[in-house]
Length: 287
Image 1 (cartoon, rainbow, N blue to C red):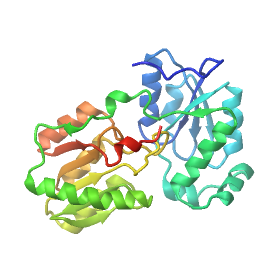
Image 2: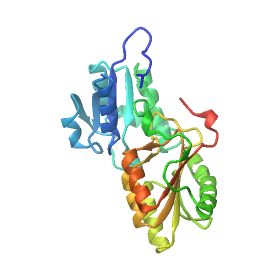
Image 3: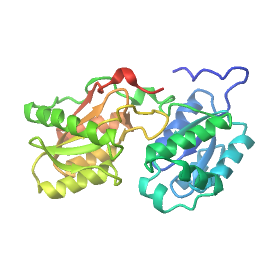
């Protein structure tokens, strides 16, 4: 894998803005395998304390302290940054105390959704001379190409539910409401909002009462791969097993599969079909 191109006139000095989950660990590991040691800005309300044991240089900041984050990135000489790891949507808009810079940014947003906020933060970084890079830049092997990823392909019932689910999911993703729907017999059992994919599947399982389900997760129509990239992990497959979900469809090129080998092995053992589908409007991918 090749590193991202260097900025004109200066070598890249990499920074990682770390949220929750395994994503930050995977980025650090992959970057280190290429000889890149990242400075880490860890979000106190989200990031794992275990990052301290794997990051050579780490600073803790509050989710709401944009000014301090920018100051630390400059202090570390960072000119290229990656955002990795989720920041819970409800926390962004209800639980944090923004500093003056973030408060001003929030006040200026035309829409109070996650895309608007993180897009504005990305613009603020770039205004400070820090380029925000595709968050999958170091993790391309974990991003699937189109095709069936498991031994079993979706059967006719599951394929019909996938087609219906993708139609619905693209609509809600376009509204920035969520990116996952759970379907049974071409009817929506559950639609994701702020709770996340795994909780949506659990809720669908309770509603369906043991009837087999199909899970569809899509990217946004113009998914910005610098942040909020769709992710599927081993926990998603385990929750599908508990919720009697027998098939999963994801967007090729735009979804990260954490622990890809273990995830597919677990799905195969459970008889779950996983398919990566060419996303609608793939030619319009951002960045």
